[in-house]
Length: 344
Image 1 (cartoon, rainbow, N blue to C red):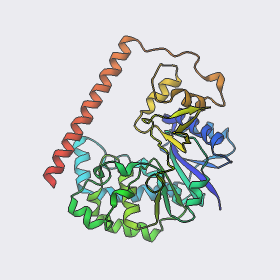
Image 2: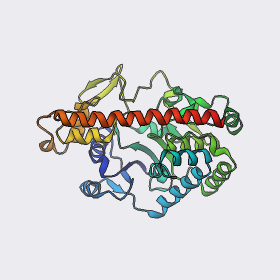
Image 3: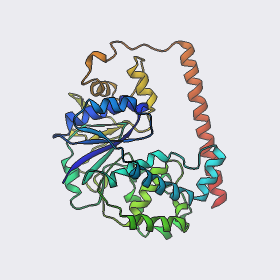
């Protein structure tokens, strides 16, 4: 039995990938192989980094990538509300399709695996996660279940109740940025069955904002495979993992009220912030020194010695760009809510 780790990356998140790989090497407690799933073909720096590491590989099985992209494409084409809305927003029909490549681990080389988004850092050993996979098919460790159901499933309440029989559906929600599963947990027959259900009208339960997260949650909840979330079922011992929490830092490891974190997730912090920071710009990100420690663990000579603030003009340009992006985001959210009210 081979335990392993997958992540999804390209050159855009190169700095974060390096930090993640270094954190795994230092904090996993034992040597665990890592396989990088390509987000797209922008991989020059990623390939060079992988070539310099003995325990890291690149997933290059185009058939596996095509399999899961085809599944995701069919699933979302069955979601007529999503197709209509994405076109109105100027998005492609296959919005964020590459994010669904996370599922490639199901047909990968590891018997049991943990998936990490590139914007995470490992803080502690993982054996307890792999052990839990002896009894469950899918394992998570996050607090998505405390968020509003609409971020995962925003279809009509009548349809949601019809599709999912669980009385406590909320308890099974999870973030798609970190999860553990077994190889072949979804067979071809199971995938085909899920597609039939999605095409029958069930696709409309899924929320549009994070397609991979909505679809993955649908797959777990609808298939009925065994599921365990440490953050929900072991509340006395679980720690936080989101960057917005207040953690203690001891020797570049984060602790939550004395308990060592398993990982920290920089979810929603733009990758450009890490790129600018590593280029020597004075960018404020949570636990900045911790990130920089792992990013430059193997190349301390490359770490910026000083950090400079951008010029007033650059700050104005970036501020204006951020303002416009936020205005567009707010408009899209309001528009979606308006459309949902009409459709419901």
